[in-house]
Image (cartoon, rainbow over all chains, first blue to last red; front, side, top):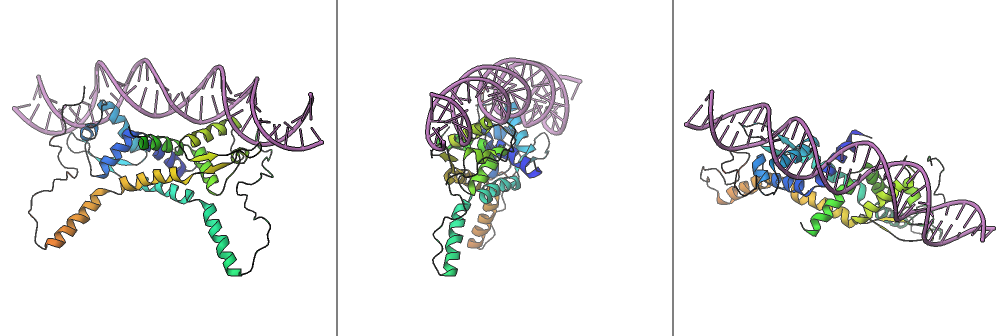
Length: 135
Length: 135
DNA sequence: AGGTTAGTTAACTGTCAAGTAAAATAACAG
DNA sequence: CTGTTATTTTACTTGACAGTTAACTAACCT
């Protein structure tokens, strides 16, 4: 599993918690201390501290030291990595293929043969099993 | 916690697993049966079945019935909901504020008062505690 | 009916994450 | 030094989740 994969694991895990999402949303409006971040929640400070550690470990936030405060800062990069994954992997490719098909048909300007395309669009799984997986 | 919040919980939880992300990536290229989806992984079929259930419960995929096959289909909406959250909540607002400040300054064409803005940009936490949280 | 293929459910195990209370660390204020 | 504020660490409980094997359902083929 690649380094990027692990980063995505950690980032999506971090974003899967509503408290952490709220913290991220808060930090998007500007840096804040732990107590400021904890204020809106009915949760003990150690709980928040743990959430911040999770956010820090996946690179979503960074923390500096300012007297006895540890202001938290949102790092946009990890967020963008996650967004890029969704964008690049999930803008359904079949639609793009359709558009490509159209384009190619456009170029050739003559009707293609009536046989099905090689792309198995939810069609019959002719060769589903490969026998390579241990049972 | 709102319905949307729960949906985001489930969606990000689903995306936090590398196997499930790979399944989603596979489905982005077109529909597929359970066995087709399972092929690349060193995991038993029930394991894959569980992952698919997780993906289905949060609306990321849907399943129909075609003879003895259950072709899986990627639903773009849940994915977009997740992406929208990242986009709308996390394009750091402080930068936008900066640009707004600039814009306003531009409009007025005269130097603004030198006092600090109300936005606490990592500054001193004057009133961090509100005493409303149980200890 | 009997067998094969596709997929799910049930029951169990191990791991990990969320939350808490209590105590420790760190910096400042008197 | 003593106390106060800010935050973390430790130790623990609880609950969810990944994965397994074994057994089951459902549809097809002959």
